[in-house]
Length: 391
Image (cartoon, rainbow, N blue to C red; front, side, top):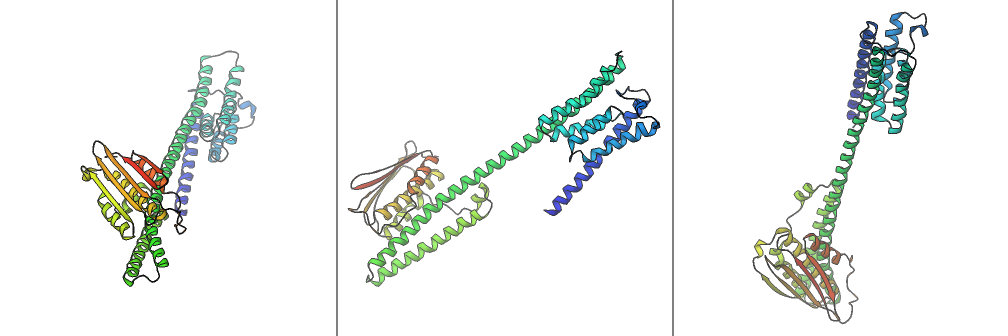
């Protein structure tokens, strides 16, 4: 970082030197043209105002000394511009004044630019006001001076507009990138909720079974302990993966490259068997015309909705029967219904939840262009979702 600042500082120094040199060359050219009669400089006050100064000092050294002020034009743009404008009434230093006015227009507020421009045009106005006979050469030189002032200010405003547009575009680009990162974080949060809720609910169910059946057969204890160990290990892996992404600068490409393979409808059978292994009674009805042609996004979305629905049933209605129906065709879309009976009383051992499951399922369905609904009666709870075949 320090090296970059040093390089930028050196560039600024050389740029300032180049501006001072350019102003000096242009000013010297103006002096020569004015003294040789090639251009009648619109000077309000003549050399008689500064008596005793030879030509070289008054018409060359003083203008060149004024050009040195351009070195501080970025630090004190208004002061430098006003000094050079005042000098224009005595010596031909219009090129340096034009550069200073350009800096004012490019760097200062619009209101400041307006009144500085008005002050800069005042010498031209006074010049014309003090001339009783408007000769063509005098008028031409006065108009030329005014055009230099207006042109410098206009060019500075144009550069200022370009800079503001570039800054605005950069700001909007940064805002879009931040929104993209936020969307990725929200997607990761949904994945984390779905995956961890599923793993931890399995762990909670089997841990609760061991707690309430301390004298269970050794084989059942071994199986329950194995499920607990497996669920805890997978949950830890998923959590480490998510935290690793959140700790690094997020961009959609990076997330896509680091994201592990996502489950789809092909993994639905494994999901059902995993929940059955946790003690759930699940009845499944599948009627899909061509499951392989379902888009990957729709397939992943449907899997996550089923996973969350089964997790909710296992958490809030443990031991109750669950009926899962999935049907669809390319022209009709996919229809999912997950229904579970409700226990007679709310179980006191029901694990706490983040209450984000229904929100997450609804958001996933909406992102896929589908719909989501849930309902509850006295003895059963139902989750319903419809998704287009190709999202």
